[in-house]
Image 1 (cartoon, rainbow, N blue to C red):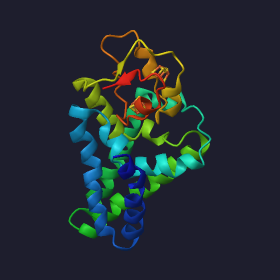
Image 2 (tube, helix red, strand yellow; image 1 turned 120 degrees about the horizontal axis):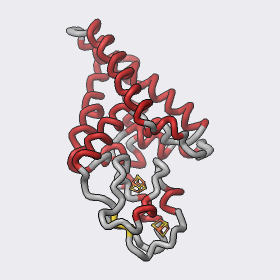
Image 3 (cartoon, helix red, strand yellow; image 1 turned 180 degrees about the vertical axis):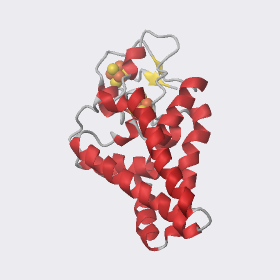
Image 4 (cartoon, protein in one colour; image 1 turned 90 degrees about the horizontal axis):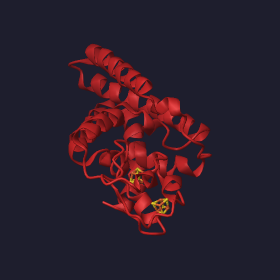
Length: 209
Ligand code: SF4
Ligand code: SF4
């Protein structure tokens, strides 16, 4: 699984390169828009953490040049995330209205939006942290809201945890699973990408699903 995630960024790069010449392939992006939402009620943001090509791009390419500063709290706020959902969906809807019926023009809408938002994500990744975009990505936000409602399997935090915070250091969204140490229901944060990085990093093997 890790090897797949580490190479999925090629899908994004090929998609954008081919999409510039043959925009009709942009319609394939519908898969990546719907998948996070379909998966969310069962496994939270699992798609974002394991199968999203753009997430892979940020984790495996931008991470190499990111200063890994704290992601600004503003980007995680419900107000900003709600605004981004409406803004991106509004832009998408208007462009799709004018392109409707022309497959090439419809595909070009996807290619344009994905290119522009990826550039925004790269700038934020270089300014703050590689996954800053993912803290307010509209599809990730919708998946997070669905996840908050359905409460998929949480991370369990054993009492052997020594609060070393290595889990937070390695978490792509800078979440803090160790804070659920005393909780019987475990770490239920709806933005958890289910990437298992914290489980692998924990020196006390205190984390598990
Ligand atoms: S890495 Fe493990 S031991 Fe360290 S704070 Fe996180 S859960 Fe606790
Ligand atoms: S809390 Fe653990 S599983 Fe969830 S996103 Fe962070 S590192 Fe991945």
